[in-house]
Length: 87
Image (cartoon, rainbow, N blue to C red; front, side, top):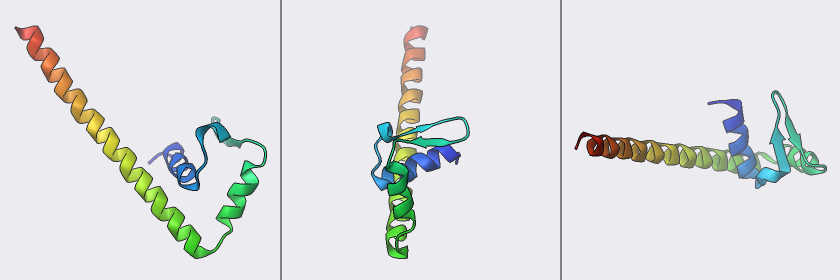
C-alpha cells in the first residue's frame, strides 16, 4: 500500500475533506489550523485511536472493493467491444 493511499484513508477517517489538505512530492500540506486538529486527535486516548484504526481499515476495504468492481466491469466491457468488432 502506498503512503498516499494510507494517508487518504486516515484523513477520511478523521473527517477531513479533500480541500483541507494537499499532497506534495514528499509532504502533506494542511490548511491553517487543520494540523493542530490532526495533532490533537493523534494525541487522544487509545480507545479513540482504536476507533480511528477501524475507520481506516473500513475505508481501505471499501476503496479496494470499488476498484475490484471497476476492474471487473472494465473486463466485461472490453469483451463486449471485442465481440462487436468480430461480428
